[in-house]
Length: 502
Image (tube, rainbow, N blue to C red):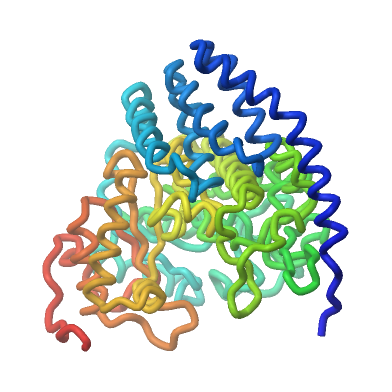
């Protein structure tokens, strides 16, 4: 039985700090109100923003967040307005102005889209066809170069135009090739963080091009190679011990040199010459992850009242296993999610920039979890991924991964209802990605840990529903053996599909 500690001393101290800060910012709120109603919107926006960041729990903080957005909107500073309204919806989901904030956020985004049309792709990338990618998520089913060539040739005959491979060997995954141990954990290209086998990735590129297929290297952002120093590990909140313990599976994006290491990783992968690099798959944070000292320091810049992890997590709901859930209408937790999301976007931007310098014609994409696409506001809390921010990065594609069976079971849906729901989510992906040619949906043809893959008729039925939502690309992970992909891309109905289960 874990030892329990009384909460009342901490609560008394927190209450005293709350009153002290509230007394300080109330005059600032009143001053901002006067400026707002006098039409001095620049002054009002700055005052309101300071108020809700310094004291997010004050009774007037939701109004300050909303009016900060309104003041920015009236100055035609639509990017800033979207940030304020987005913060309001994330931090105060039960606030009195939720409906108005949603409307204003949508209006601000329309203005942003009109003023900032999507950047055109570089000329060298203009001829890419619609993606039909085979993703060998657990490594290639081959032991030597001849086997690899045979495998890629078979995929090309089935109609695939791209092969995605895990270019980085994580300690929790099978290796891409069967190789002799080198004594160093890491990847198939050389960096200071991951020092092995640059030649194998380059070989794959050449073999794929031989069969007119593109080679996509999939890189992690948060996952680890084995043996990383504990100072570089992320932290996870333990609700029982009320402490933040090292997380052995994820790197701390806020650690010193973290972005530089990721940039070196991406640059070395690009040097092997892949046609595209997909970042992530591990991009999402669980709600109780990412509680490193650096994350807390970043949080204090926008939410200075939050001084330790306990202030974020005390009182948040947990599931049956004791894991933190989304967190409800907690301003501290909302600010924490935003800090994690900003850092993840910074990491993606650094990796893409470093790789583009080495390989200008390479295409770059980020893999987002389905929760973030399904509901960007709730998804930010659930996954730490900011879809609005992701769409603004200089990426060529935005990708969502879907496990149809997990999706269906988690929501208690029939198969047809699950597929219809997935189609609606995929349509939202197209909106998020700005242009239809930027969207890719990855279907997990085999549930993680499952003994067998989805049958071909079920994959076909799922894809028929998904592709009806819009002309985005698809990837199958892993690709079903012997099944041509062209009928699925053409939206032909599944053959011999059984009737809906009762």
